Length: 268
Image (cartoon, rainbow, N blue to C red; front, side):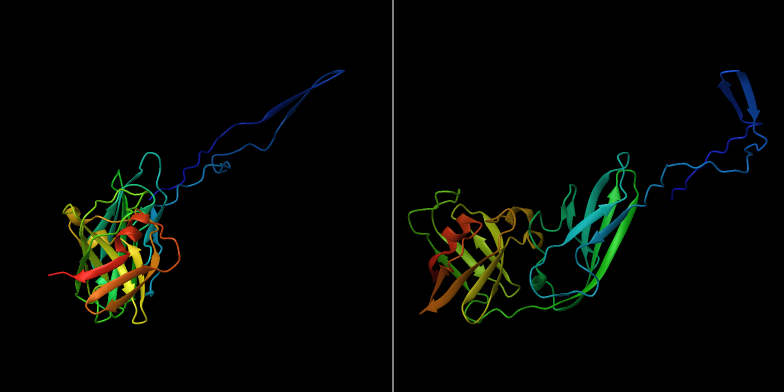
């Protein structure tokens, strides 16, 4: 904890010399400043290190949500070393540079991957000098039902030509699987892996939220969008096939739209 320090000045007297046209007049103060008298200072105390969470205590999390930590009170001599995001006491994500966003910049906390019920979200910030601060929030999560036609089902298809002209996506067969936890796991034609958070409703609406990197090993953290990747598509089952279509709005991730749009056959 820092305390403000004031300097006290003791003087025997204050002499003011005034020059006039007819000579000099000397005036001596009879009110000395003693060591008991504080001198005003403009130096403000440094605020203590603090961190706040964008998710408030008591929040009911039903859809993917941004989880961002805001740090105050750090200094040039003791900058932030890291910000840790913990769920129920387990370390889930670490950020070293601002903005301090869970699951990478622009991506989201996907509550459906957690068991429905109460959870504790904690943010810890540490400076390079070892000072720390904490913020906690108790939240409740729910898990939207995944339609039976999709839950646990795997599909594969090869995107149609012409391929996406503004993105770098490999040609070949893609595979996807819809998890009950609201996450699509995908395999690209080159063996790469990634995730895509989703919510599907029984009336044929499919919302894609972007990658859910924190629940998978680092080698499986591929994604179609770097940030702000929410879009809506439509889905329907025709026989055993899954048909995914764009909904008329532009996908902020052109490569994702190119891969997902089309007819998918059940994968073995």
